[in-house]
Length: 387
Image (cartoon, rainbow, N blue to C red; front, side):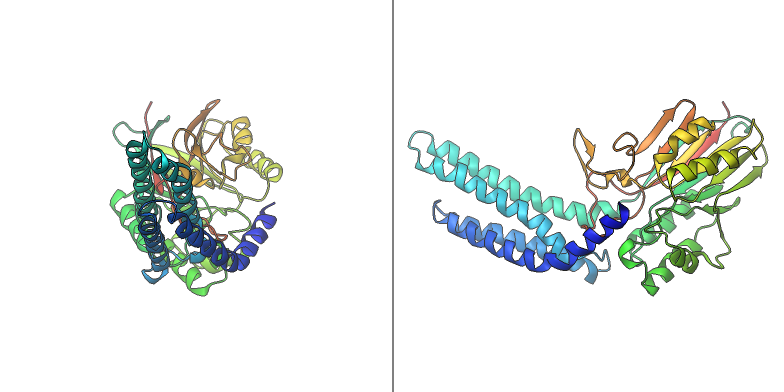
């Protein structure tokens, strides 16, 4: 299914430019023609086309400003189509009929014009937020968990970073390093998907990803697991992690972490397939003392059933991006999780196992717009304290 999705995404990017040009030209011509049916409609149509052009300029400027590097024409079409279609519908079904009505014309036409203005101004604001504000508004989520055998007043701090999806170094990556240095965690864990899927073979992307990881340090180490097979491919992992002394890559391994006042066991599992990965978790859990505190690092939340069966204390995952695009009262539109929206983001307590699914840091590729909406990027600091 993943391979099919990748192929579909590449096909879309290859053919969308011509399709996009045709559709946008047709929509623009239709909007101007509709303007003839509305008083001052031609002025309105030109204003709407100007704002659509402004969207296009802002999106096209992203790679020039070194902010993001997705296919610009696909993104322009993605945002221009709703604006043009919505404006045309308002003019045809609301404003034009209202102006032909004698009794209600002034009020209805004024309300229609207000709706048209709100739609277009709001849509421009959405473009600015989705491309320029939210993707770089890195948040820190603090999660406090009671755990046994910890010294009072000295919590052990674990910082989780996931789904970096690095294209090239941008203000987002620089902000990440700054935030990590400011938080001063005891332990850093990385839960997969390091480079963006559209740039896996790009040498500069590999260098930038490696450089970003090289800046991460914590007194009790930095540990990483391999994420989605389609993203964290063997050649990419080799290029990014080989010889990187400050990061330990856990590939189906257990690693004890001991400090004054406590001990925990990290279980790092490579994301390959649920049946196989569940069996690996069971085998690894058998090597750990029964009463030990366990922290599972696995890229997606899909291993939750096996984690519960093996009585894992804390399970840190990513993969869903929190949907990356969320809508009010519903949340994530897409999660790419086997559980759908059940574990889309945040903290879940499942039969004694605490699962945290982070929104992650970066953005999906595959020709998708490099946007976040109602879903800012996130790193998570977990504080383990006494009960």
